[in-house]
Length: 82
Image 1 (spheres, one colour):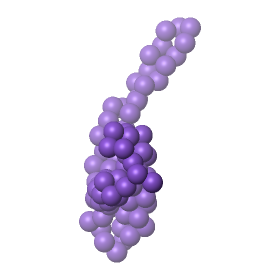
Image 2: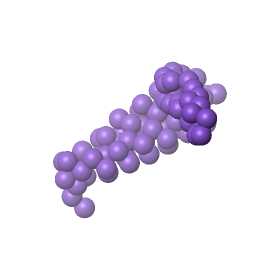
Image 3: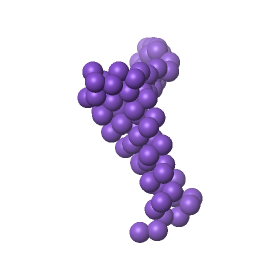
Image 4: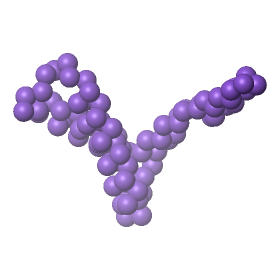
C-alpha cells in the first residue's frame, strides 16, 4: 500500500499508536531501565465554568516519557517507509 505524503490521518494514527505502545513498554521496563520511564507532563489543570444552566469542565494533560518519544520516532520512520 502506497501512502500519499499528505495523508495526515494515517500519520496521526501511527504517531498516537507509537506513543501509546512506547509508553506501555517504558512502564513495563521501567524497573530494569529507569531512563525509559523518565518523562514530563504538560497541560492545563481542569477548571470549571458554571453558567447556572450548564456546567462545563475544561482541561488537558499530556504525559510523555522517553520510550514514548522513541515510539513516536519509530512510527514516523515507519510512515516514511510506507
